[in-house]
Length: 291
Image (cartoon, rainbow, N blue to C red; front, side, top):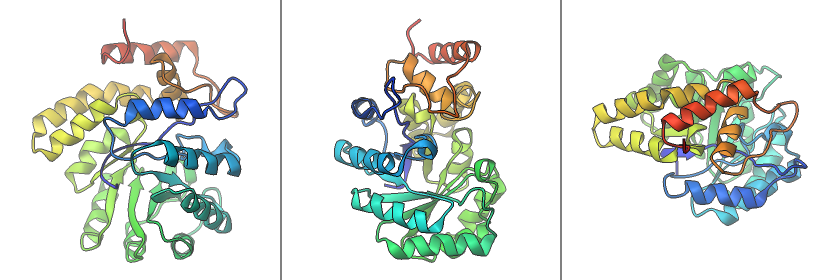
């Protein structure tokens, strides 16, 4: 469940911005041949603009529809709300929960520890920490991660700090625990695998799941040359999918490919025509879109 290629699913919307559940099923059908698990209702799934009812229903629908393990997003900057939401994700049938660090509040390391410890004590499903300082303005230090890893159902971290030294330190400090480190930055997937990471929770896997899977498999098989070549091949896609705030570009890429996406909810807006052209160009170069 916690290794390999795990797409952070978009939440497709209809024209009226209601959740497109049929679209979710369509996207899962496209992905499931290649990936190892899925994450609904995370950052890429626009959890910030889903109501609590929508959030839980999206997770429940993915659980009922997907044949793969489901890691439901359930974080909040309120510990009380994070407990409630994680309990609801557990009731919805998710195999695990992924919790972003509390944003805006800027808790210190002790506050982060107490936050996750409190949530973990209230549920029985495994919990994955999600560290993305560029969005939350707070970083989980490796020592705090190691302390949290001592809690039985805290089983891993999605590391999106962009700091390879920090990733290596986490791997070192948790090496004696049943704890996994997953890349949260597509462009760092291969480097993180090389220092002990086990996979990636990926934006790119929404549009190129086969290429991401092939790269991770090549590394695992010891074919480093092939893994490097695939990483180089994918680099323009990694870059263009973050030409604007995620998930704006990946939603446009999915729309161009005939997958379900819809426009992002405000305050995010649709990709500009100029940047859409850049996305389209890269998709064509990778054979993901017909010329």
